[in-house]
Length: 295
Length: 252
Image (cartoon, rainbow over all chains, first blue to last red; front, side, top):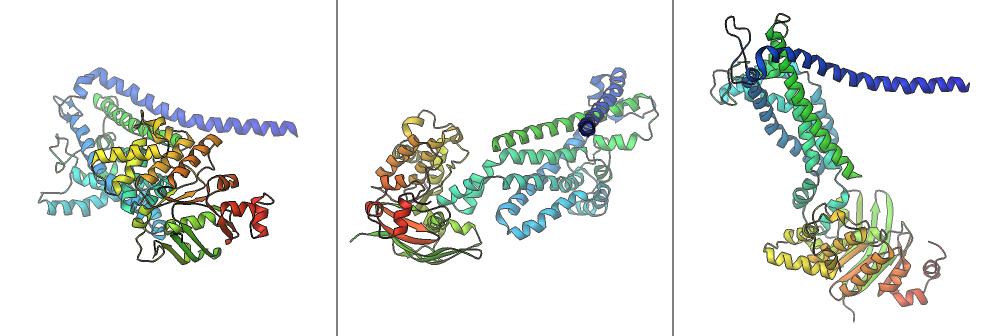
Protein backbone atom coordinates (compact mmCIF):
# COMPACT_ATOMS: atom_id res chain seq x y z
CA UNK A 1 0.00 0.00 0.00
CA UNK A 2 2.65 2.47 1.01
CA UNK A 3 4.76 1.48 -1.97
CA UNK A 4 1.85 2.21 -4.27
CA UNK A 5 1.33 5.61 -2.71
CA UNK A 6 4.99 6.25 -3.11
CA UNK A 7 4.79 5.38 -6.79
CA UNK A 8 1.89 7.75 -7.50
CA UNK A 9 3.61 10.52 -5.66
CA UNK A 10 6.69 9.95 -7.77
CA UNK A 11 4.60 9.68 -10.92
CA UNK A 12 2.73 12.96 -10.45
CA UNK A 13 5.82 14.85 -9.46
CA UNK A 14 7.66 13.70 -12.56
CA UNK A 15 4.77 14.23 -14.94
CA UNK A 16 4.27 17.79 -13.71
CA UNK A 17 7.97 18.44 -14.15
CA UNK A 18 7.75 16.97 -17.63
CA UNK A 19 4.90 19.25 -18.68
CA UNK A 20 6.83 22.24 -17.44
CA UNK A 21 9.83 21.01 -19.37
CA UNK A 22 7.84 20.62 -22.60
CA UNK A 23 6.87 24.29 -22.72
CA UNK A 24 10.41 25.43 -22.02
CA UNK A 25 11.81 23.00 -24.58
CA UNK A 26 9.32 24.22 -27.17
CA UNK A 27 10.33 27.82 -26.62
CA UNK A 28 14.01 26.94 -26.86
CA UNK A 29 13.32 24.80 -29.92
CA UNK A 30 11.58 27.65 -31.72
CA UNK A 31 14.38 29.99 -30.81
CA UNK A 32 17.01 27.53 -32.10
CA UNK A 33 15.09 26.85 -35.29
CA UNK A 34 14.83 30.55 -36.02
CA UNK A 35 18.41 31.36 -35.08
CA UNK A 36 20.04 28.53 -37.03
CA UNK A 37 18.10 29.28 -40.20
CA UNK A 38 18.54 33.04 -39.82
CA UNK A 39 22.25 32.46 -39.48
CA UNK A 40 22.39 31.26 -43.06
CA UNK A 41 20.60 34.39 -44.21
CA UNK A 42 23.03 36.63 -42.38
CA UNK A 43 25.94 34.66 -43.81
CA UNK A 44 24.73 35.20 -47.34
CA UNK A 45 23.43 38.76 -47.28
CA UNK A 46 25.04 40.23 -44.17
CA UNK A 47 23.37 42.07 -41.30
CA UNK A 48 24.09 45.39 -43.01
CA UNK A 49 21.96 44.55 -46.01
CA UNK A 50 19.22 43.07 -43.86
CA UNK A 51 18.78 46.22 -41.77
CA UNK A 52 19.56 48.61 -44.64
CA UNK A 53 17.14 50.95 -46.33
CA UNK A 54 17.21 48.79 -49.46
CA UNK A 55 13.82 47.70 -50.68
CA UNK A 56 12.31 44.37 -49.68
CA UNK A 57 12.47 42.67 -53.05
CA UNK A 58 13.82 39.17 -52.46
CA UNK A 59 12.16 37.60 -55.49
CA UNK A 60 13.70 39.96 -58.04
CA UNK A 61 15.25 38.03 -60.90
CA UNK A 62 18.44 40.00 -61.48
CA UNK A 63 19.23 41.95 -58.31
CA UNK A 64 17.20 40.81 -55.27
CA UNK A 65 17.41 43.08 -52.20
CA UNK A 66 16.58 42.15 -48.64
CA UNK A 67 16.16 45.34 -46.59
CA UNK A 68 13.50 45.01 -43.90
CA UNK A 69 13.47 48.67 -42.91
CA UNK A 70 10.17 49.34 -44.67
CA UNK A 71 8.63 46.26 -43.07
CA UNK A 72 9.86 47.31 -39.63
CA UNK A 73 8.43 50.77 -40.17
CA UNK A 74 5.16 49.17 -41.28
CA UNK A 75 5.01 47.07 -38.12
CA UNK A 76 6.03 50.07 -36.04
CA UNK A 77 3.37 52.34 -37.57
CA UNK A 78 0.47 49.95 -37.13
CA UNK A 79 1.54 49.02 -33.60
CA UNK A 80 2.17 52.55 -32.41
CA UNK A 81 -1.09 53.69 -33.98
CA UNK A 82 -2.92 50.84 -32.28
CA UNK A 83 -1.32 51.71 -28.93
CA UNK A 84 -2.19 55.39 -29.24
CA UNK A 85 -5.80 54.47 -29.90
CA UNK A 86 -6.19 51.54 -27.52
CA UNK A 87 -4.27 52.78 -24.47
CA UNK A 88 -6.39 55.83 -23.60
CA UNK A 89 -9.57 54.09 -24.63
CA UNK A 90 -8.76 50.93 -22.66
CA UNK A 91 -7.54 52.68 -19.52
CA UNK A 92 -10.48 55.08 -19.64
CA UNK A 93 -12.86 52.19 -19.98
CA UNK A 94 -11.20 50.34 -17.10
CA UNK A 95 -11.59 53.40 -14.87
CA UNK A 96 -15.18 53.80 -15.89
CA UNK A 97 -15.96 50.15 -15.16
CA UNK A 98 -14.14 50.09 -11.86
CA UNK A 99 -14.70 53.53 -10.37
CA UNK A 100 -17.43 55.48 -12.10
CA UNK A 101 -20.13 53.24 -13.53
CA UNK A 102 -22.57 51.26 -11.40
CA UNK A 103 -21.45 47.77 -10.46
CA UNK A 104 -24.19 46.00 -12.46
CA UNK A 105 -22.89 47.70 -15.61
CA UNK A 106 -19.41 46.48 -14.80
CA UNK A 107 -20.68 42.93 -14.39
CA UNK A 108 -22.24 43.11 -17.85
CA UNK A 109 -19.61 45.09 -19.73
CA UNK A 110 -16.40 43.51 -18.53
CA UNK A 111 -17.22 39.98 -19.74
CA UNK A 112 -18.42 41.48 -23.01
CA UNK A 113 -15.15 43.30 -23.55
CA UNK A 114 -13.24 40.16 -22.68
CA UNK A 115 -15.34 38.27 -25.18
CA UNK A 116 -14.06 40.62 -27.88
CA UNK A 117 -10.80 38.69 -27.64
CA UNK A 118 -12.63 35.70 -29.05
CA UNK A 119 -13.33 37.35 -32.41
CA UNK A 120 -11.15 35.49 -34.96
CA UNK A 121 -8.53 37.72 -36.52
CA UNK A 122 -9.74 36.89 -40.02
CA UNK A 123 -13.10 38.41 -39.14
CA UNK A 124 -11.38 41.56 -37.93
CA UNK A 125 -9.54 41.67 -41.26
CA UNK A 126 -12.84 41.24 -43.03
CA UNK A 127 -14.25 44.18 -41.10
CA UNK A 128 -11.17 46.14 -42.11
CA UNK A 129 -11.84 45.54 -45.80
CA UNK A 130 -15.59 46.10 -45.90
CA UNK A 131 -16.14 48.62 -43.04
CA UNK A 132 -13.07 50.50 -41.90
CA UNK A 133 -11.42 50.70 -45.34
CA UNK A 134 -14.33 52.32 -47.20
CA UNK A 135 -14.95 54.61 -44.23
CA UNK A 136 -11.33 55.83 -44.21
CA UNK A 137 -11.31 56.24 -47.98
CA UNK A 138 -14.38 58.44 -47.82
CA UNK A 139 -13.48 60.35 -44.67
CA UNK A 140 -9.99 61.30 -45.82
CA UNK A 141 -10.64 61.25 -49.56
CA UNK A 142 -8.18 58.45 -50.34
CA UNK A 143 -8.16 56.14 -53.37
CA UNK A 144 -8.57 53.22 -50.97
CA UNK A 145 -8.68 52.68 -47.25
CA UNK A 146 -6.26 49.78 -46.96
CA UNK A 147 -3.44 51.47 -45.08
CA UNK A 148 -1.54 51.65 -41.78
CA UNK A 149 -4.34 53.55 -40.06
CA UNK A 150 -6.81 50.83 -40.96
CA UNK A 151 -4.51 48.23 -39.41
CA UNK A 152 -4.02 50.40 -36.34
CA UNK A 153 -7.74 50.74 -35.77
CA UNK A 154 -8.34 47.02 -36.03
CA UNK A 155 -5.34 46.13 -33.88
CA UNK A 156 -6.52 48.64 -31.29
CA UNK A 157 -9.78 46.74 -31.03
CA UNK A 158 -7.88 43.48 -30.73
CA UNK A 159 -5.61 44.83 -27.99
CA UNK A 160 -8.52 46.40 -26.14
CA UNK A 161 -9.78 43.30 -24.29
CA UNK A 162 -6.35 42.65 -22.77
CA UNK A 163 -5.82 46.28 -21.84
CA UNK A 164 -9.29 46.77 -20.36
CA UNK A 165 -9.30 43.50 -18.45
CA UNK A 166 -5.83 43.82 -16.94
CA UNK A 167 -6.21 47.56 -16.24
CA UNK A 168 -9.51 47.00 -14.52
CA UNK A 169 -7.92 44.43 -12.22
CA UNK A 170 -5.13 46.90 -11.51
CA UNK A 171 -7.55 49.71 -10.65
CA UNK A 172 -9.62 47.38 -8.48
CA UNK A 173 -6.49 46.43 -6.58
CA UNK A 174 -5.85 49.98 -5.39
CA UNK A 175 -6.54 49.76 -1.65
CA UNK A 176 -9.88 51.21 -0.56
CA UNK A 177 -7.91 52.83 2.28
CA UNK A 178 -6.25 55.26 -0.15
CA UNK A 179 -9.57 56.35 -1.54
CA UNK A 180 -11.13 56.71 1.91
CA UNK A 181 -8.18 58.79 3.06
CA UNK A 182 -8.68 61.06 0.09
CA UNK A 183 -12.43 61.44 0.59
CA UNK A 184 -11.91 62.07 4.29
CA UNK A 185 -9.72 65.06 3.39
CA UNK A 186 -12.58 66.58 1.47
CA UNK A 187 -11.51 65.46 -1.98
CA UNK A 188 -14.25 64.90 -4.52
CA UNK A 189 -14.51 61.91 -6.78
CA UNK A 190 -12.55 63.44 -9.63
CA UNK A 191 -9.67 64.56 -7.41
CA UNK A 192 -9.51 61.15 -5.79
CA UNK A 193 -9.54 59.42 -9.17
CA UNK A 194 -6.88 61.53 -10.84
CA UNK A 195 -4.60 62.30 -7.92
CA UNK A 196 -4.77 59.22 -5.73
CA UNK A 197 -6.11 56.20 -7.62
CA UNK A 198 -4.43 56.85 -10.96
CA UNK A 199 -0.91 57.49 -9.60
CA UNK A 200 -1.22 54.39 -7.43
CA UNK A 201 -1.59 52.19 -10.50
CA UNK A 202 0.74 53.71 -13.10
CA UNK A 203 3.06 50.74 -13.34
CA UNK A 204 0.19 48.26 -13.52
CA UNK A 205 -1.45 50.22 -16.31
CA UNK A 206 1.86 50.26 -18.15
CA UNK A 207 2.03 46.48 -17.90
CA UNK A 208 -1.55 46.21 -19.17
CA UNK A 209 -0.79 48.38 -22.18
CA UNK A 210 2.39 46.47 -22.97
CA UNK A 211 0.58 43.15 -22.84
CA UNK A 212 -1.95 44.59 -25.30
CA UNK A 213 0.81 45.86 -27.55
CA UNK A 214 2.53 42.50 -27.41
CA UNK A 215 -0.63 41.01 -28.81
CA UNK A 216 -0.96 43.67 -31.51
CA UNK A 217 2.60 43.42 -32.76
CA UNK A 218 2.40 39.69 -33.42
CA UNK A 219 -1.00 39.85 -35.11
CA UNK A 220 -0.87 38.65 -38.70
CA UNK A 221 -4.11 37.92 -40.50
CA UNK A 222 -5.83 41.19 -39.68
CA UNK A 223 -3.00 43.42 -40.86
CA UNK A 224 -2.39 41.21 -43.87
CA UNK A 225 -5.97 41.83 -44.98
CA UNK A 226 -6.34 45.46 -43.98
CA UNK A 227 -3.11 47.31 -44.67
CA UNK A 228 -2.64 46.86 -48.40
CA UNK A 229 0.75 45.13 -48.19
CA UNK A 230 2.83 47.54 -50.28
CA UNK A 231 6.51 46.94 -49.55
CA UNK A 232 7.56 50.51 -50.33
CA UNK A 233 8.76 52.66 -47.44
CA UNK A 234 5.58 54.17 -45.97
CA UNK A 235 5.33 57.92 -45.60
CA UNK A 236 2.65 57.98 -42.92
CA UNK A 237 -0.54 56.45 -41.60
CA UNK A 238 -2.28 56.82 -44.95
CA UNK A 239 0.38 54.74 -46.72
CA UNK A 240 -0.20 51.15 -47.53
CA UNK A 241 2.19 49.13 -45.37
CA UNK A 242 3.38 45.57 -45.08
CA UNK A 243 4.22 44.32 -41.60
CA UNK A 244 6.85 41.70 -40.80
CA UNK A 245 4.19 39.21 -39.83
CA UNK A 246 2.29 39.67 -43.09
CA UNK A 247 5.50 39.29 -45.09
CA UNK A 248 6.30 35.95 -43.52
CA UNK A 249 2.73 34.75 -43.89
CA UNK A 250 2.45 35.76 -47.54
CA UNK A 251 5.83 34.58 -48.76
CA UNK A 252 6.68 31.53 -46.66
CA UNK A 253 4.27 29.28 -48.49
CA UNK A 254 5.66 30.04 -51.93
CA UNK A 255 9.37 30.45 -51.45
CA UNK A 256 11.64 27.65 -52.69
CA UNK A 257 13.29 25.87 -49.78
CA UNK A 258 16.95 26.60 -49.19
CA UNK A 259 17.12 29.87 -51.09
CA UNK A 260 18.41 33.08 -49.57
CA UNK A 261 14.88 34.37 -49.67
CA UNK A 262 13.77 31.35 -47.62
CA UNK A 263 16.38 31.93 -44.93
CA UNK A 264 15.71 35.67 -44.86
CA UNK A 265 12.10 34.98 -43.92
CA UNK A 266 13.39 33.09 -40.90
CA UNK A 267 15.43 36.14 -40.03
CA UNK A 268 12.27 38.26 -40.26
CA UNK A 269 10.53 35.85 -37.89
CA UNK A 270 13.50 36.00 -35.51
CA UNK A 271 13.34 39.79 -35.38
CA UNK A 272 9.63 39.62 -34.62
CA UNK A 273 10.18 36.95 -31.98
CA UNK A 274 12.81 39.03 -30.23
CA UNK A 275 10.62 42.14 -30.26
CA UNK A 276 7.61 40.37 -28.77
CA UNK A 277 9.82 38.55 -26.25
CA UNK A 278 11.27 41.86 -25.13
CA UNK A 279 7.87 43.50 -24.77
CA UNK A 280 6.33 40.61 -22.89
CA UNK A 281 9.35 40.25 -20.66
CA UNK A 282 9.29 43.94 -19.74
CA UNK A 283 5.56 43.76 -19.06
CA UNK A 284 6.10 40.76 -16.82
CA UNK A 285 8.88 42.54 -14.97
CA UNK A 286 6.66 45.54 -14.31
CA UNK A 287 3.82 43.29 -13.22
CA UNK A 288 6.09 41.30 -10.92
CA UNK A 289 7.38 44.46 -9.28
CA UNK A 290 3.78 45.47 -8.76
CA UNK A 291 2.87 42.18 -7.12
CA UNK A 292 5.83 42.45 -4.80
CA UNK A 293 4.85 45.94 -3.77
CA UNK A 294 1.27 44.79 -3.16
CA UNK A 295 2.35 42.35 -0.49
CA UNK B 1 -23.53 76.20 29.37
CA UNK B 2 -21.28 74.06 27.27
CA UNK B 3 -21.17 74.60 23.55
CA UNK B 4 -21.85 71.50 21.48
CA UNK B 5 -20.16 71.08 18.12
CA UNK B 6 -21.99 67.90 17.29
CA UNK B 7 -25.47 66.87 18.39
CA UNK B 8 -26.48 63.36 17.48
CA UNK B 9 -30.23 62.79 17.70
CA UNK B 10 -31.97 59.43 17.49
CA UNK B 11 -29.52 57.96 15.05
CA UNK B 12 -30.50 54.63 13.52
CA UNK B 13 -28.26 52.84 11.04
CA UNK B 14 -29.15 49.81 8.95
CA UNK B 15 -26.70 47.78 6.88
CA UNK B 16 -28.86 45.79 4.52
CA UNK B 17 -31.49 44.29 6.82
CA UNK B 18 -29.31 44.50 9.93
CA UNK B 19 -30.17 47.14 12.49
CA UNK B 20 -26.77 48.30 13.69
CA UNK B 21 -27.25 51.58 15.54
CA UNK B 22 -30.42 51.73 17.59
CA UNK B 23 -31.30 55.28 18.40
CA UNK B 24 -28.09 56.93 19.51
CA UNK B 25 -28.37 60.42 21.00
CA UNK B 26 -25.36 62.27 22.35
CA UNK B 27 -23.84 65.74 22.36
CA UNK B 28 -20.17 66.40 21.75
CA UNK B 29 -18.77 69.52 23.43
CA UNK B 30 -16.26 71.80 21.82
CA UNK B 31 -12.52 71.37 22.46
CA UNK B 32 -12.85 68.12 24.31
CA UNK B 33 -11.79 64.59 23.63
CA UNK B 34 -14.71 62.20 23.50
CA UNK B 35 -13.94 58.48 23.56
CA UNK B 36 -16.30 55.85 22.19
CA UNK B 37 -15.71 52.49 23.84
CA UNK B 38 -17.45 49.15 23.75
CA UNK B 39 -16.91 45.58 22.61
CA UNK B 40 -16.21 44.75 18.95
CA UNK B 41 -19.26 44.99 16.75
CA UNK B 42 -21.14 47.39 19.00
CA UNK B 43 -21.28 50.03 16.27
CA UNK B 44 -18.64 52.53 17.47
CA UNK B 45 -16.94 52.75 14.11
CA UNK B 46 -20.27 52.88 12.27
CA UNK B 47 -21.30 55.82 14.44
CA UNK B 48 -17.98 57.58 13.84
CA UNK B 49 -18.20 57.14 10.08
CA UNK B 50 -21.74 58.51 10.05
CA UNK B 51 -20.47 61.83 11.32
CA UNK B 52 -18.42 62.66 8.20
CA UNK B 53 -20.71 60.79 5.80
CA UNK B 54 -18.16 58.07 4.97
CA UNK B 55 -21.09 55.70 4.58
CA UNK B 56 -21.94 57.49 1.33
CA UNK B 57 -19.45 55.16 -0.33
CA UNK B 58 -21.54 52.15 0.65
CA UNK B 59 -24.98 51.98 -0.96
CA UNK B 60 -26.19 49.22 1.41
CA UNK B 61 -26.22 51.51 4.40
CA UNK B 62 -29.30 53.49 5.38
CA UNK B 63 -29.29 56.08 8.15
CA UNK B 64 -32.18 57.71 10.02
CA UNK B 65 -32.07 60.47 12.59
CA UNK B 66 -30.05 63.66 12.68
CA UNK B 67 -26.48 64.70 13.31
CA UNK B 68 -26.22 68.44 13.79
CA UNK B 69 -22.84 69.99 13.09
CA UNK B 70 -22.96 73.59 14.30
CA UNK B 71 -26.71 73.40 14.01
CA UNK B 72 -26.85 71.98 10.48
CA UNK B 73 -27.90 68.40 9.78
CA UNK B 74 -24.99 66.61 8.11
CA UNK B 75 -27.25 63.78 7.00
CA UNK B 76 -29.45 66.15 5.00
CA UNK B 77 -29.45 65.41 1.29
CA UNK B 78 -28.50 69.02 0.60
CA UNK B 79 -25.39 68.90 2.75
CA UNK B 80 -22.35 68.55 0.51
CA UNK B 81 -20.24 65.71 1.93
CA UNK B 82 -17.12 67.11 0.28
CA UNK B 83 -17.52 70.43 2.11
CA UNK B 84 -18.43 68.61 5.30
CA UNK B 85 -15.31 66.43 5.27
CA UNK B 86 -13.14 69.52 4.94
CA UNK B 87 -14.48 70.57 8.34
CA UNK B 88 -14.58 67.11 9.91
CA UNK B 89 -11.34 65.24 9.39
CA UNK B 90 -10.66 61.57 9.96
CA UNK B 91 -7.80 59.26 10.90
CA UNK B 92 -8.27 55.57 10.23
CA UNK B 93 -7.51 52.44 12.18
CA UNK B 94 -4.76 51.21 9.89
CA UNK B 95 -2.27 53.92 8.96
CA UNK B 96 -3.05 54.72 5.32
CA UNK B 97 -0.61 57.28 3.96
CA UNK B 98 -0.77 57.72 0.20
CA UNK B 99 2.05 56.03 -1.74
CA UNK B 100 3.63 59.44 -2.23
CA UNK B 101 6.37 61.36 -0.46
CA UNK B 102 5.92 62.58 3.10
CA UNK B 103 5.60 66.14 1.88
CA UNK B 104 3.07 65.29 -0.80
CA UNK B 105 0.91 63.39 1.66
CA UNK B 106 0.27 66.58 3.59
CA UNK B 107 0.33 68.82 0.55
CA UNK B 108 -2.48 66.89 -1.15
CA UNK B 109 -5.20 68.00 1.26
CA UNK B 110 -3.98 71.59 1.14
CA UNK B 111 -4.00 71.65 -2.64
CA UNK B 112 -7.46 70.22 -3.07
CA UNK B 113 -8.62 72.80 -0.56
CA UNK B 114 -7.40 75.51 -2.87
CA UNK B 115 -3.99 76.44 -1.44
CA UNK B 116 -1.79 77.36 -4.41
CA UNK B 117 1.09 79.44 -3.11
CA UNK B 118 4.04 77.10 -2.59
CA UNK B 119 5.50 79.08 0.34
CA UNK B 120 2.16 78.87 2.14
CA UNK B 121 1.97 75.17 1.46
CA UNK B 122 5.48 74.65 2.79
CA UNK B 123 4.64 76.51 5.99
CA UNK B 124 1.41 74.62 6.49
CA UNK B 125 3.10 71.26 5.93
CA UNK B 126 5.81 72.14 8.43
CA UNK B 127 3.28 73.36 10.97
CA UNK B 128 1.09 70.32 10.86
CA UNK B 129 4.07 67.97 11.00
CA UNK B 130 5.24 69.86 14.07
CA UNK B 131 1.80 69.65 15.66
CA UNK B 132 1.78 65.91 15.17
CA UNK B 133 5.33 65.63 16.57
CA UNK B 134 6.71 64.12 13.41
CA UNK B 135 8.69 67.08 12.12
CA UNK B 136 11.93 66.40 13.98
CA UNK B 137 12.02 62.83 12.72
CA UNK B 138 11.38 63.60 9.05
CA UNK B 139 12.45 67.18 8.37
CA UNK B 140 15.59 66.01 6.54
CA UNK B 141 13.77 63.59 4.28
CA UNK B 142 10.44 65.06 3.30
CA UNK B 143 10.82 63.62 -0.20
CA UNK B 144 11.10 60.06 1.09
CA UNK B 145 8.14 57.78 0.41
CA UNK B 146 5.69 57.75 3.28
CA UNK B 147 5.52 53.98 2.96
CA UNK B 148 9.09 53.74 4.30
CA UNK B 149 8.08 55.23 7.65
CA UNK B 150 7.34 53.06 10.68
CA UNK B 151 3.72 52.35 11.57
CA UNK B 152 3.72 54.92 14.36
CA UNK B 153 5.26 57.55 12.11
CA UNK B 154 2.76 56.75 9.38
CA UNK B 155 -0.12 57.26 11.77
CA UNK B 156 1.28 60.59 12.92
CA UNK B 157 1.64 61.54 9.25
CA UNK B 158 -2.02 60.68 8.74
CA UNK B 159 -2.84 62.89 11.70
CA UNK B 160 -0.71 65.70 10.27
CA UNK B 161 -2.48 65.28 6.94
CA UNK B 162 -5.86 65.55 8.63
CA UNK B 163 -5.04 68.64 10.72
CA UNK B 164 -3.30 70.43 7.85
CA UNK B 165 -6.61 71.29 6.24
CA UNK B 166 -7.71 72.92 9.51
CA UNK B 167 -10.90 71.02 10.27
CA UNK B 168 -12.98 71.76 13.35
CA UNK B 169 -13.51 68.17 14.38
CA UNK B 170 -11.16 65.20 14.03
CA UNK B 171 -12.56 61.69 14.09
CA UNK B 172 -10.13 58.92 15.00
CA UNK B 173 -11.00 55.28 14.47
CA UNK B 174 -8.84 53.22 16.83
CA UNK B 175 -5.76 55.12 15.69
CA UNK B 176 -3.38 53.27 17.99
CA UNK B 177 -4.55 49.70 17.59
CA UNK B 178 -1.69 48.91 15.20
CA UNK B 179 0.94 50.82 17.17
CA UNK B 180 3.43 49.92 19.87
CA UNK B 181 3.17 51.58 23.33
CA UNK B 182 5.78 54.24 22.62
CA UNK B 183 4.14 55.33 19.38
CA UNK B 184 0.80 55.24 21.16
CA UNK B 185 2.10 57.54 23.88
CA UNK B 186 3.28 60.00 21.23
CA UNK B 187 -0.08 60.02 19.51
CA UNK B 188 -1.88 60.50 22.83
CA UNK B 189 0.38 63.38 23.78
CA UNK B 190 -0.35 64.96 20.42
CA UNK B 191 -4.09 64.56 20.84
CA UNK B 192 -4.02 66.20 24.27
CA UNK B 193 -2.31 69.23 22.74
CA UNK B 194 -4.58 69.30 19.71
CA UNK B 195 -7.78 69.58 21.68
CA UNK B 196 -6.98 73.26 22.18
CA UNK B 197 -7.59 73.65 18.46
CA UNK B 198 -10.00 70.89 17.55
CA UNK B 199 -12.76 68.78 18.92
CA UNK B 200 -11.72 65.14 18.96
CA UNK B 201 -13.87 62.03 18.80
CA UNK B 202 -11.90 58.81 19.22
CA UNK B 203 -13.01 55.20 18.97
CA UNK B 204 -10.80 53.00 21.08
CA UNK B 205 -10.54 49.46 22.33
CA UNK B 206 -7.99 50.49 24.85
CA UNK B 207 -9.87 51.46 27.99
CA UNK B 208 -6.75 52.82 29.63
CA UNK B 209 -6.33 55.10 26.65
CA UNK B 210 -9.84 56.45 27.11
CA UNK B 211 -9.11 57.01 30.77
CA UNK B 212 -5.82 58.79 30.05
CA UNK B 213 -6.96 61.23 27.40
CA UNK B 214 -10.74 61.48 27.16
CA UNK B 215 -12.78 64.21 28.82
CA UNK B 216 -16.01 62.36 28.05
CA UNK B 217 -16.49 58.65 27.53
CA UNK B 218 -19.40 56.93 25.83
CA UNK B 219 -19.99 53.24 26.35
CA UNK B 220 -21.82 51.45 23.58
CA UNK B 221 -23.17 47.94 23.59
CA UNK B 222 -25.00 46.09 20.81
CA UNK B 223 -25.82 49.27 18.92
CA UNK B 224 -27.07 51.24 21.88
CA UNK B 225 -25.49 53.99 23.89
CA UNK B 226 -25.53 52.55 27.40
CA UNK B 227 -23.97 55.42 29.24
CA UNK B 228 -22.22 58.69 28.44
CA UNK B 229 -20.58 61.09 30.80
CA UNK B 230 -17.35 62.60 32.12
CA UNK B 231 -14.57 60.00 31.94
CA UNK B 232 -13.73 60.05 35.64
CA UNK B 233 -17.36 59.47 36.58
CA UNK B 234 -17.73 56.70 33.98
CA UNK B 235 -14.78 54.80 35.37
CA UNK B 236 -15.40 55.44 39.06
CA UNK B 237 -19.13 55.76 39.54
CA UNK B 238 -20.95 54.51 36.50
CA UNK B 239 -24.73 54.61 36.67
CA UNK B 240 -25.20 51.28 34.91
CA UNK B 241 -23.99 47.90 36.03
CA UNK B 242 -23.16 46.98 32.44
CA UNK B 243 -20.82 49.95 32.17
CA UNK B 244 -19.12 48.99 35.41
CA UNK B 245 -18.64 45.41 34.28
CA UNK B 246 -17.20 46.41 30.91
CA UNK B 247 -14.92 49.15 32.14
CA UNK B 248 -13.57 46.87 34.83
CA UNK B 249 -12.81 44.11 32.44
CA UNK B 250 -15.53 41.67 33.47
CA UNK B 251 -16.37 41.12 29.83
CA UNK B 252 -15.29 42.46 26.50
